[in-house]
Length: 261
Image (cartoon, rainbow, N blue to C red):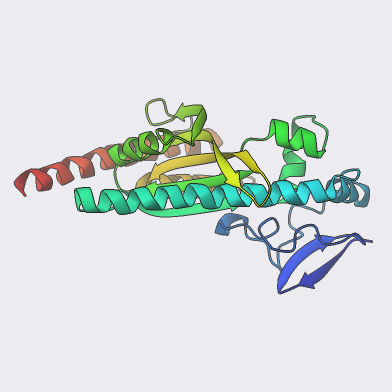
């Protein structure tokens, strides 16, 4: 029987095996949208059988390797955050303003990893997870202006130890629902006691307004029994266009201020 056990004030979902990763970065993500605690940790897990839970936790003798993998992803997030924070300090001195407002980060929970692997019809194993998932580690950068997004992304990509695997520019080509953002999938080195390994991190860049729209859209699209869903989708696209106009208008105002100074 699976049960919940408190380990150092962190809720860890486990069977009679040792805790999956008691540091908390798996069960407890940095992003408040994916924070699990005693009140909601079972949300999303009730559809998984006891046998399936045992599969994701044990993964046929891969448990220790899986723990190490998640620890490396957490280190990769820290590396990317440090790089971005250093860029922020540098640019704030050069341009007299901070290019981003905040950074959010999250590590996928075991349940989320399991669900995604199953949806793709992939084997739930260490090797399969490491090979097929590129968004286990995620960093979201909230910028003030659209041009700051491109400037930050270019500076990050230009660093010697950063390798860009994929770039998706949803600013230039928004998704059909109106979503706008710049996504980079990068590899960064993680330096451990006896090895160095390059780990994959997904970095998303948005403006404050884009993040506002995306957060509300994410919440609303999961509501059930929506009347006239086509009308709602059209309204969301219209709102996204208004936000895009607002972003560009704010950039123009900033440029006027900079010109006067």
